[in-house]
Image 1: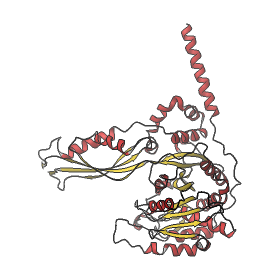
Image 2: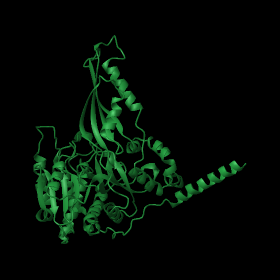
Image 3: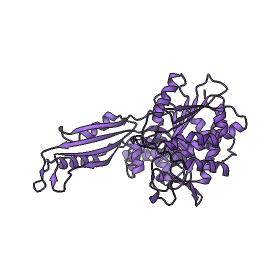
Image 4: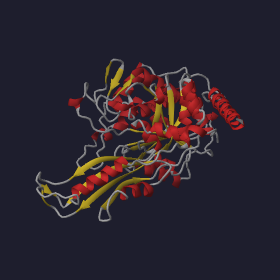
Length: 483
């Protein structure tokens, strides 16, 4: 009887703790708020954005015959669209086509900030689009164009903000670099070379802001409303080319030891045995911020991660987007077998694209592949990049500054850190600048994100206008950034 009473008391006490934590879970307040953003882009700003989008800047790194004429004309176009920027800021071309604009600040002893994007875009088949991908047509309140989201909206927003502030006579308190790469989509060297230049000159940035997160209106967990997700880390990436070998022969006499059979067996094992899920600090913080805006059930679970962390990690495995946030992923992208339908090949090949969770490294992720194949299997790794470090976000002055700017432009949006599952050029800056963040200050409503690199990429016109206001705030209040 005494045991039952003690047990009941313990359960009751646990329930009180759980409920109390759920009740206390509130959205993190933004201290020392900035004045509300009262400026946005106008119709003329939209037309300048559209002119930029009409320039088909597809780099084609691996194509020796690639046409560079669009890149040759890009800076002259920008000079015409944003004359004050190019008259007053110091232009430097990186590798011929990367664009660095130095806006010298009042105190040049302070470490600079870098606000960056990329102006190269992936190709697009016009026949598959409702509107020509390089016409920048406006329909249903959105501008349709390759690069509208990824990421000429950021570059145009930064230049528009700078043009507006220069017209006011504004001077930043510290050096500001506006930088845009021409080779981001192809994994080229422009951004690494920009990083090298800054390091060689002793101008290691205090903070870097690149593409990545955005303001979204369809957050996970069924939470309603807008959430600004700021990338504080980036998964690593590598491609593993796997080759299995055996005696070939006629398809009439197959064996489980054939090269193709061994390849399929190993790939099947890799897919059916995913790594265990782990909640990193930024993912846990993101989930708490989301839950704080959700119902009591969400707050009960995510307000008590000390108890429910294993359950949450399991739940996150249920969706492809959420699963990618909590573990290393292995995506089969290429297969090669026999050149004939009735011949068993001597060798079979596959390519697996691996996105490495920040909680492990490339070696550990590769070791998991090797466990699924025999010792005779050959491997080739290429395009290898380790996961980025996690940028400081809990009370850090740079992250808090971003939160204040976001809140001034999007006062109804929640703000949360997250781990970026795709790659960006930010990873090159993160090697030298711990405060490297990934966020576009623009509302990517509905299915906007899913159209990146796909058909009918488009951005709401009003979202772009409001994004200009975000970038004005970002630069205007740099005196509130830490030193």
